[in-house]
Each structure stands twice: as C-alpha cells, then as structure tokens.
Length: 469
View (cartoon, rainbow, N blue to C red):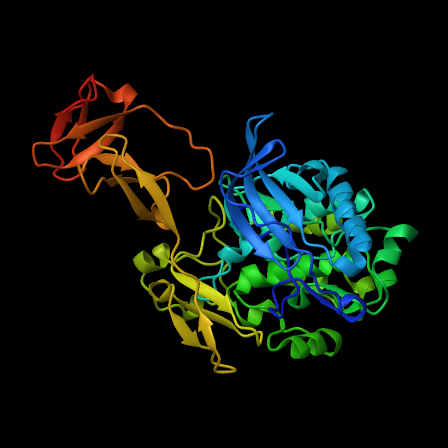
C-alpha cells in the first residue's frame, strides 16, 4: 500500500470529493504527527505512507504479531466529531465482514489515548492508476483478467450487503504477484440499513467525480446500489483499455457530461481492440442502471467468456502491407501476457482544473504549465530504492525499475540485487562469477562446479563451489 489511503476533499477528478450536504465540513482536529520510531500502543511507526484531509496512514510494525501493517489514523471535525467517528467505525466494520483474496483485510480497530485508529494489511506494490498509459494501453486480455478479479471481489461485498461507492484506480492496489486488491471501504454503505443511510444526507455527493455513476452525481443516497459500483468499474475498464477517461474536462464539465452525454466507444481510441470487450465496457457504463449488468457476477461471467474465446482475427489483413516477418513481431491489444505492464516510460499528473497531463519519465520532478489553465503543475519525482551492498556495505539509491534486478555496486563493483520496495523477497542462494574478460554475473547455487557461458564473451567458465573469486 505505497500510496495515500486516506482520501481527501480534493478538486482532482480522480480523487474522492465531497459536495452538497457534507461540503461544509472541515477537519480541524488533527492527530499528532507521528515520526518513524514513535510508539502507538502495540504499533511502532516505520514511515508515513500518506497524508490527506481525511486522515494519515503509516507503515507500522505490530510488535505482538511481528508483522507490518498499514495504520490509519483519521482526522475528525471538532464540530461533528461523533458523526465522523461513526463513519470511521462503519468503514472498519464494513471491511471486517469481508473475506476475499482480492479485498484488503482489516486487522484491528480501536482507540489509544483518545486517538481512533484502524490497522489493515500492508499491500506492497502500485495503485492501478500507475498502469494507465495513454501512449501504450494495456493488452485486452490482461485488462479483462484483472477487472474480472475486481468484479468478483466487489460481488463478495455486494452479496454481504455493502456498496463500495468509491471504486477507482487509486483504491485498487496491484501487489507484486500482479493481483488486484480492493482498498478503502470508507464510503461503503450498508444496503437498506437506515442507520447508515442517515450518515449520508440527500444532496451530498461522495466519491471520485470521474468514476461516479449518474445516480451518484445526482447525490441521492437512496438510489445508490451495486449498479453504481458496476458503472465505476466500467470506467476503470475503459481507462485501462484506452488510457483515457470516458469524460474529460473540469469537475463541473465532467459531472455535466456524466448526466447528459453518451460516452464514446473505447474503439474510438483503440480501433484494434476486441469489439466484444468494448461491448462489455459500454454495457457497464450505461446511463440507466437497468441497462447495466444485473450484478458484478454477471459482468465477471462475460469477461470470463471473453477470456475463453480466441482473439479476433484482424479484419484489415488485406490492407496490411507489412512483410510476414515484421507482421509476426507486431503485437496487438488482444495479445496475452503474464499481467498488466507498469507504465515506466511516462509519468502522469492531474491539475486542479481536472486536466490530466502525461509526460516523459525524464521530466520527473520538474514543474510544467497545464495546457488547459496555464497554472504551474509539479510532476511527481522519480522513485528511488535505498540499496545496500552486502559485500562492502556501500549504500546507494537505485531507480525503481531496477527493483529485483542485479546491478553492480558503485564502490566494489560486485553484483548485488536491488530490493523490491515494501515486499518480501525470496532470496535464492547465488554464486558470484568473474570471467577472464572481466564480466561479472551471478549464478544459482545449483550450478556450482558446472560450466556456463559468460554473458558477455560467450566463453565457457566453471562456476566456483565456494562463491568466491
């Protein structure tokens, strides 16, 4: 969960926003800022994962169970603290009732020295937003596979009487095994439960504008149901397939389009994609709830049928002038792969006016002007991994895309593996090998005493038994 789990009252189209009945709420009562090493009951703070208007999330160590957890501490408004405590406790209760491999589990909830808290599983990885790439959209079958798993997770919530109401890429983590994990049931509502209905008044819009269904935009709490989550998941499917949202512009413009305008087919952005998958997407984001899928299970079933089918033949083969050799190398959106590909070539940022900007990775950390409103916009900086050499003790910062790969230590030049941030890593016993040409590499322990080819010159060399040069 390397992201801000506490969602704020933000103007960004992809972030949780609150308008109408609860819009006047301000969070004046701030919890004490906690630093690495601080103790909070049985938990020891390791680092801050995120800060937002609704609370703070820390990576903490549970000293009793000896495990890492995500510790969530909310911020409550002093004028309406009781109501917000009820909402916070409802989130904990909602998530605690669910048991599904693609839903983040809640471990504990309580109060320490007057401070309310909740702990949940710490999920290492990236948010689903990090896999959106307008220049190189994800392959159809990879997207269908991931969205199907999310649909089944949300179906589990629905059959247990819960509607998420804030389904968006930022609330789905993709762990190191490429499994999507649904997070943050903070806006979840018990279906047909009067006490919970009173916590959200009519006229209040809760959720993330770009992913809201028409009935959610209208702010009528009684009209929300599983069909609202289906719409939001359809928007995620649309964005992963095309790299674009169905409706774009300012907050007001997006809300107006959601209510009055029919979305363009994803085929507009991806003519090469599967028409069948485009149909599934368009059915999920239909304006009227009755025109959408009856349930998340029904949507998951259609996605499974698509995955079982054979990729459609290219209808334009008669016009293809490429050679057979180059055509064989060409890959389309229907090709299958191990999973979603992280967007490592581009970085994205969203301006306060709602404009999403995509820039080359080399622009990370720099400030640019928004093409819509001309306001300065700071691009997210490059992510670095703190790496220590096991041989000489030298510490250095490695690029994020080198996680899990073997690099040379800048001090002793011996090969070491860059750790995967936040995740457990299986360490395979390795032997360091140096060829006569000077090339260094590592071999697995089972190759000790055997001949292998040098990765540089191709010469045959014998892997030493003791792992020393």
